[in-house]
Image 1 (cartoon, rainbow, N blue to C red):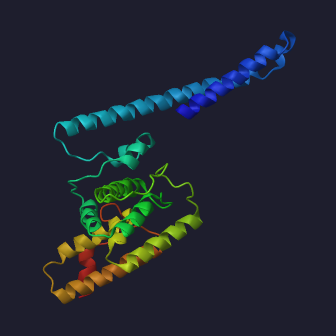
Image 2: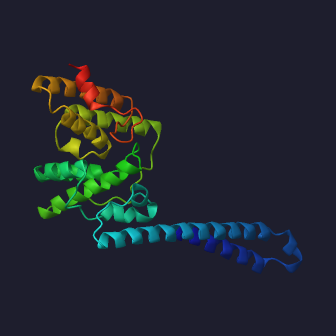
Image 3: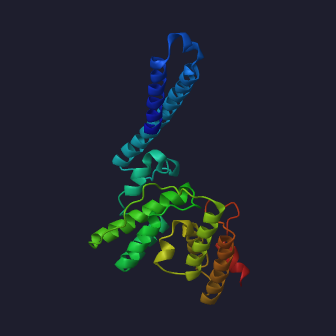
Length: 262
């Protein structure tokens, strides 16, 4: 909205300057009318943007009121990912009582990591991804908030916060490079880098669900089934996909993978 206001002011100043300098006899030959039409369109668009922005602010206020009344339900992803809340997403405080697997696991893993490694991970979490979606983008900065708080608790200096949550380069080349990076992290297995990665959170959710579903199996059966599941997820990642437990239309079923390996 600020950028649009600046454009409006510039166009208005240009238009007034033209009208001030032309001879009255030549007024009909100027392009003032098209400029006026453009300004009117900009004003209309600015009003619509402002209306949408105020609507979003009201929505956030309603959720804040609910939270103050004791409702700990998380804000919907579409609200948290709204550009109007981008600075909040980047600077948000860490969730100290998380109830989602990704945040719980990362809170535990980050507390056990060495400070230099944790500093590198925060820098990676701050880097916008060319293959993210609203869900993983929101999760990225929730994970980063935990990392930042852990570093501050140790007296370390966190990496500088990013200017934006969205990647400027979403080209096919950038996306292939990102998918290759995620594949390397997955193949490396258990470790801080794995739990710190929001775009692998869905795959870890699948593995966690498979472990619960296979709890009654023998150790050998469970191990074999999980190994098969890891390979299946690896193939999906290699193809540039992002397996997720709840949203993937071709959802991987951990129990099926385990039974198939028996």
